[in-house]
Length: 220
Image (cartoon, rainbow, N blue to C red; front, side, top):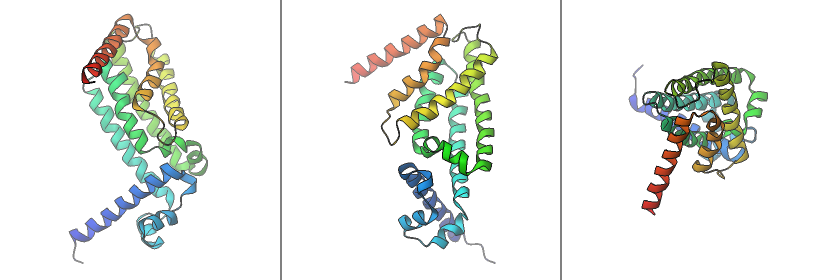
């Protein structure tokens, strides 16, 4: 059998086309309203062509999720290497806003995913636990650097992380189909953390707000 790089490229290109089209339809029409046949129709391909690459919708959802997790991992890793209050409460939400909008259906159709794909959601739950540990590490570093109140214990940090995930999911469910702005998201998510800032952290937060406001005024 002769290996053909061109053939492999065509296979991978078709998979990418399928994922891109499916993601667009899931976000626009809702996960449970879209079938593999719908994806095939929009791509002007046969149903068999689609199922050759993804035997069922769950496999397609799983691959989209894996791509989202990897993109999110890269964002979190970049933040953890240069940790300041600004990175955690401004730049991290800004980066994750774009990513969450890209994979919007994972938030909007969360209950449907849990009802219809329980095995897949077990994987999601494990990944969420791992991500919570990574984000908790960021909060612990902020506490050590005196941006957060020193009396905040690890149990409280766990509670913050649990609420954080719920708030983010609710935000995108509430502002479904592009009604949200990045500024709204940053303010919405930061309100959870603001009561836990130390005096030093609150001042750093205000300084950043002032600097951002001044810069925006200069640009306008």
